[in-house]
Length: 212
Ligand code: MP5
Image (cartoon, rainbow, N blue to C red; front, side, top):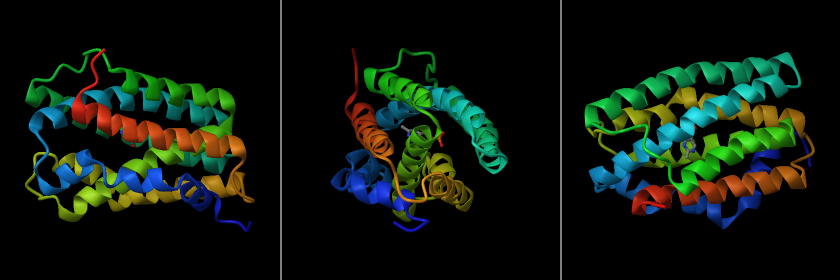
């Protein structure tokens, strides 16, 4: 395998589940404006919990970075999360949502998996990071294609489908290609596949509710 293909190999290897991300009812309903407000609110609370854990995961990745270029890229990513968390908190306050509500098992499990993947070393954790970010970029880009700019959700749509976010996702693909120029290891593929399945279950959990 030649250089520049590690990220592509992870995506290609995940097969059908990846294409399901953009076709999930949460994504299609957010796109056509039919997503019930209660479902969006449930997503907002669950995803805030995810992003809080994600920031700790990403901060851990900075400590694993094999060189200063990788550390620069990852540290820049942690900095942009403050604006994202501020957006979640502002919107939650405006909607009267309790961000301290107990997370459901999928939000809890996915976030714990992110942080546990740091123990598996930089290449595996990077495959996890890329999967989570690429999943959101693709899903929210699909929403952006048809969603109204006047939608209550537009700030969130824009957050994960902007040129800046596209650049971040591309720079993570670059880090993958640098660390695994001959393609992903089995452990990287396994971790990436798990991310895809968690992403699908996360959408379903917020779409239908995930009490326990
Ligand atoms: C992301 C997210 C993207 N916010 N939520 C899920 C379930 N998956 C991926 O992460 P970030 O930190 O918002 O860019």
